[in-house]
Image 1: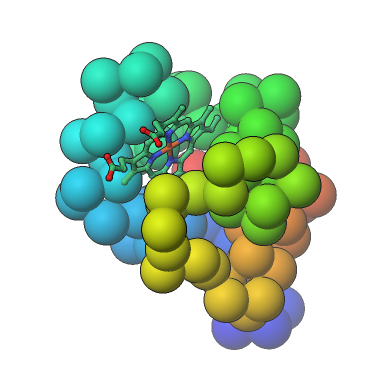
Image 2: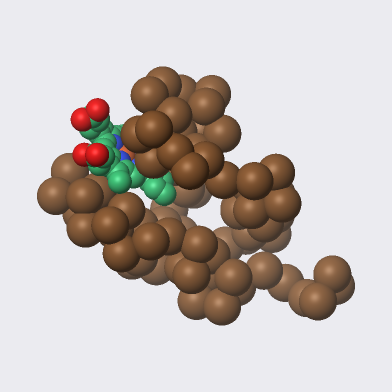
Length: 83
Ligand code: HEM
């Protein structure tokens, strides 16, 4: 696992709750959409809202992502955002 490339479908998408996907799709942030998320600018914006670099930290009021979860998203971005 540690040596596998991080996969959007397998590793990233399951981290979003249905409520996250539903709320944010209404604001044109398509968390479950590979086409949207594989855009590096979109992926980095999502990461920065999740880790609190940008406020309000998402999801509003938590539960906020663990360092492990944030790390998986960071690695996925850095590895080139595989499906
Ligand atoms: C580009 C990325 C994002 C932007 C610009 C963004 C922006 C926003 C804004 C402005 C709101 C309304 C805040 C409020 O009413 O207090 C909101 C609500 C929400 N966001 Fe995001 N968000 C982003 C990513 C995310 C992510 C990654 C998650 C979860 C993993 C998330 C989950 C939610 C949820 C669940 C709500 C509804 C909260 C509620 O009404 O109780 N958002 N978002």
